[in-house]
Image (cartoon, rainbow, N blue to C red):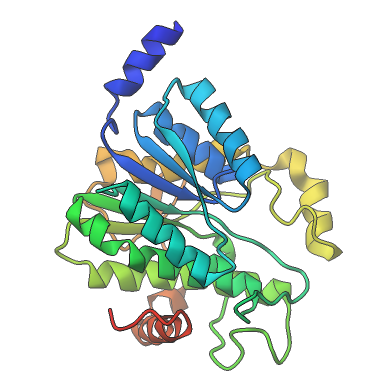
Length: 295
């Protein structure tokens, strides 16, 4: 297909005129998701921490999609002040938001504390996205029908929300902190879906599969070793992003909300993920920790 034909296709694609925001989009699943949305004609905003890597990803996506409507927004999800500033800047730049993909995530084998004083895995994987989503909810509602896609993991099934040790202060284990954060993603999805009922905004979560990215690769310990050894057997970022892009764009799931997906199919999540009291309590704790105010 010629470059001019590709350029024309993006301007008549199913997401042309739609604004999509993807966190953690300078590499891995996030970048592959952003590329997939750009190929469908969307205006795509890459929410990245590093300007150099973000710009490199932007140029690559523009080159491969022939879609010039791709830009970078800088945000450090480890700092809530940065999340708030990013949300403010986004609202000044755009009058609508049709798709929000909360993708960024980390695995830390050792306990790391953010500048705000929170354990990094819980702060970045859950709290920052909880805050960002709520700060942009008015735009999503005004742009309805719109969609939120939270990237979780099958690892959530081994998770437990320990309200007495959310920050891993008493005893930290990456093997416990990461599944806890991914369970928080699912609980957040279900609780937010209940709160958004009737607004035209859908929210779903997804297990992208075991994907070959930089995730945990540089960590020491057993997890880093597993990732490096089994990388050749893992899915490519493009394969991992397939269900994410589908949830963000397909008419098949236009009205689906409060669901957990894998391989473009609705799946059952863990038993505790359906606990209404846990979800409500997590919401209130998250609201207090992020100083969000009543929502």
